Image 1 (cartoon, helix red, strand yellow):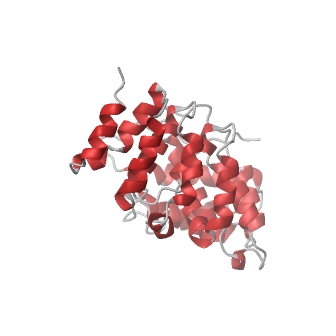
Image 2: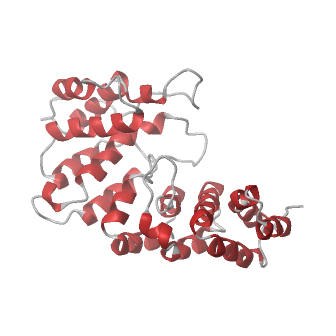
Length: 282
């Protein structure tokens, strides 16, 4: 059997090279090849032709959605059947949380497929696809962060989705743990604002409390950024949380706190200055 793989990609964004080119002809051909390996009824040539149609003007996020829509045309129309094929086509999980380069962006269309077709029952023969989609995101986030698609589920059914995140925040895989914080950020860059969590951030506090001392800096950075988001909508809550964390804080947690209050400091908040001073790492 031909090997499942993803195309090589630069380690970082290169000046003058649009990020969207990571989802161009090579990636689309490889995506189609991977699907054909696990689903011999897949019309790879037709998929590639459809996915490349009018793609030139699209940015990387729109390309991901465009490719996902092409995938659906040539996979079973039942979401559960289609996503099982997509998951079978995945390469092994990432083994580290840094220095992975840009290659994992290959999985953006896979994430888009879940958010486009895995939220509503209409794409799954009338059956609720929630559990199937949560399993898909659990697997996908170990290859490329699912911080964008998880938001569609928070918006659709916050209580049920947060219950899953409360379980995942204790997962042994750091990519899964990070998703719990990053995906529930109210102001995640390049994503739509999660209005309910911006207005009431209290549902995310258990996640931040659990992950603030995480063994992986990759996860802790997400916590710091998340608290920074909260500070933009509920400054009192964010600063109170940081002051609480200062008590008996480790060196690593102090770095989280200092990063979390950077925006209030830019705005001249004296309380934030005091927190940063107290969190100084010697």
